[in-house]
Structures are given as C-alpha cells and as structure tokens.
Length: 487
View: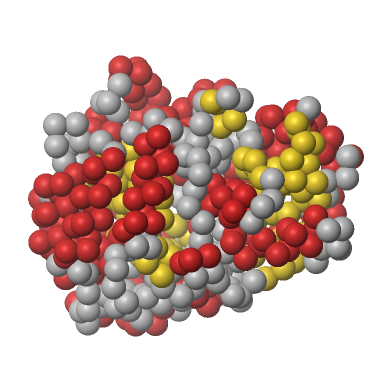
C-alpha cells in the first residue's frame, strides 16, 4: 500500500475525458432517465484510462494543485476515485464542480426532467460513501474540498459533519498550500476558508501530467463584469507564451492529441480591455496547432468576435485542415434585451453600446458560421431584474438566429458573483413567456443537433456506432419536457 502526504481526486463524472469530447460532460448535469445508468455512464462519463496505475488524464484544477504542492516539496498524487483504498494519506483533496447539483445546468435539467438528483451529485456522494474514502478517514486522513462548486456547501453545513469533510477551501488552488501545510503539521482546520488573495503568474505552477482533453489555461479572470458571474471578481492575468507552450508539451508527451485553450474569453488573450489583439490571438492558436492536431476554445464572446472578425478568419485558417473541419467554444448570449444588459452585464457588449447587443450577436453569428466555429451558447432565464419585455426581446433574437449553426441552452439563474444574495429561479416561477423561450431553444437545437452530431462523431469508427444513443438522449429530453408541461 502506497503512502502519500496529499491524495487528490474527484468523483467519477469529473475523472473522465468523456470520450475525448468535452461538451458531452455537460450531460452529467442530467438526472437519471430512460437510458440505463450503465449506458449513460459509458456514453457521458466513462472511466478514465490508466497509465502505470494512475489516471491518464485528470481535471486541470487537480493537475494545477498537484504541481504546486510538488513544487513546494509536498508529496502529492492524483488518483482515480475507485483507487483510494490502495493508498494511505494524511490529507484527501477533493475537487468539486457542482457537488449538490445546484449549478445552472443542473437546475435547468431538473426543471425539465424532474426525475431525481443529477448524476454529478449522485457520484460525488458515491465517492464519499466509498470503502476507499471511509478507510482513509478511519486512518485519520483530513479532507479538504476545493473547486468552483465550493459555494454550495454553505447551504449544507451538516453535510460536512456527516461525511467527515474538515475544510471547504474557496479560492484559487495555489493559495491553499499554506492551509495544507498547517494540516500536515497537525493544526486544526477551519470549517470554511475563503481566500481573497490570488497568485501572481510566477506563483502558478506548470502542470506535470496530462489534463482532461488537453485543457490548458491561457489566462484567468475576465474584464466584462457580469454581475451573475464569480469569475469577474478575480483580477485579469494572461499567461506568457512560454508558460502555455510548456503545458502543451506536457500533454503532447502523454499522448494527448487535442487541446482546449481555456480563458473566459480567448479572443481577449493578452489585452487588459475588451478590444482583441489580432497578432496575439493568432499566435496563441498557431502555438497550439504546433503541438495538437485538434483545437477548441473554452469560451469566447460575441462582442469580441464582432469587433475583430478578421481574427476568426485567420484562426479558422490555422485550426481547420484535413484533420479538423471545425472548432467549438462556449459562448454566452444570455439575453436579447439591451435593458437587461445594462442592469446585469455592464461590459457584455463592449466595445459596442448595449443598445446594439442583439445586432452584435447576429453579426458575430454570421462570422462564426462562415468560418466553421460552432458554439454552444447559453441564455440565462430568471435574472433578478428580468421583465416580460426582456424575455420577449430574447425570444425575438432567437428567431433571428434560427439559421445559426449552434446549440443554444437556456439556464435557470443561480445566485453567484455579485448576485449571490438573490434567490434561485425555479421551475414554479416560469411564466408562459419563459416556457416559450425554452420551446424556441429546443426547436433550434433539434434543428441543428443531428448535423452537429454528424460532424462531432466522425473521428473514429466507435463514434459512428454510439452516435444514435446521443441522439436518443436528446429525444428523451424533448419527451420529458413535453410530458411535464415545460415544453
């Protein structure tokens, strides 16, 4: 049995590369449904392959804290959740994304399907109830939980006692090192630790092993200041090319063939404001393509695309080739209302005026369609100051986007960022206009999902065989929505 100072892990829904297709991971927000669990698990969060008894890839957040701890002389190891029983450890570090299923995607699925707790919550609890975790706790290991989903534990403090969670760390992972050192020295941990300070670029370690689907950060923070988002509370920092290249090399060395360039807006790489710098964005994609056959972006903004369409044209020329025919990004439409933009998203439309936002979205949609960028877009339903007129404006924008090859996903408002004191938006609060909005989104997605799936599942023979099951899942969502009167 191997001993280690800090054992790092995550639940099964996170310790998966989703068949190399990151977007499939969003389905873990869904509750159990008519697909048997074994089949759903295989389709959306299959067990990660192992190399030398360890996960071949692991969530980027775990890889970052693993590297930082090792750089500080602390023995740390990322392991599969099913392998905990093989180790002894003084500290268990658990990475969480949406531990109770209260995030925007999960609450929206719950509102439509209403068939139980989402898989990501179910498997987080399974981790804490596993024999391996209980063994480590019986041997005296302390548990520290961290990650984007830590805010949820504030609402369930008794859960910490029930499952032996000693500390919930809220902040950027690098700042948890001193807390971990205190725990290793036998000091009592606070039940909640909110860390406001952030690491400088020099304090952020380079990953030592491969990340899920080759995801690497190119920067942290966001200048747009949307009130519903917690990321905007962090200062903006961009990684230098050398730091990014080192992480590309790590993933290449481990045999990863793709990368996801991660930032809240890849189009704004290297700038402090909201006007993209063409040379910098082009160069970062050229660098990525040097090491990886397949590239995608984590996020981009409609305003940045519309501000510098030439960048999208040049990036398409770099990314799309005989192997890769298109690339994806997550993009927030959020609303079609200029008034709601002014109230909740002050810099969403910048460098343009808020009144022009619907036109900005339509212009950017055309640019992306012409250059093989297919985004997964979000809308936020039920923002605190939303009016019926705001919903109508969003429905009108959706109608204008019917020929935009994309997925558009409505998300129920969840109190985060500057709006964390507000109330959740619940299914019971949906008006007829909200239902019409969901219907519009469903019609849009059903129109495009088959064509997108044909492009998404064409890299391997296995993709062709399992593609029908993913299409069946979309039919289940449609059926459940109609059955429950949501759609």
